[in-house]
Image (cartoon, rainbow, N blue to C red; front, top):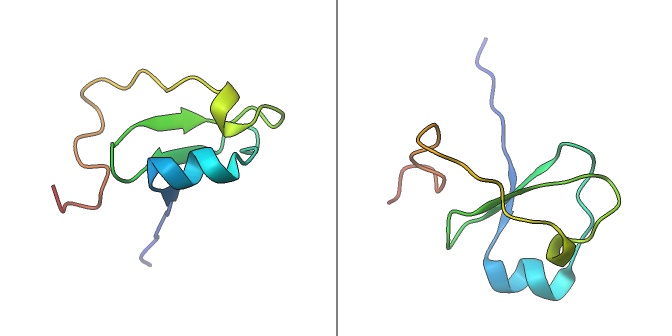
Length: 65
């Protein structure tokens, strides 16, 4: 059985303008920058820091790099 996991994603400008609150442990990906934020269930997008990713994630945009 194939399993597909899709992360919530949008371009940076849209994340900033809508400023959503990500659920606890929900990942949000800026599809144009490759940066990621991890939700805490109470802070808005602009209040969250970017996650410090190193090496493990090489293609955030689905392989269209």
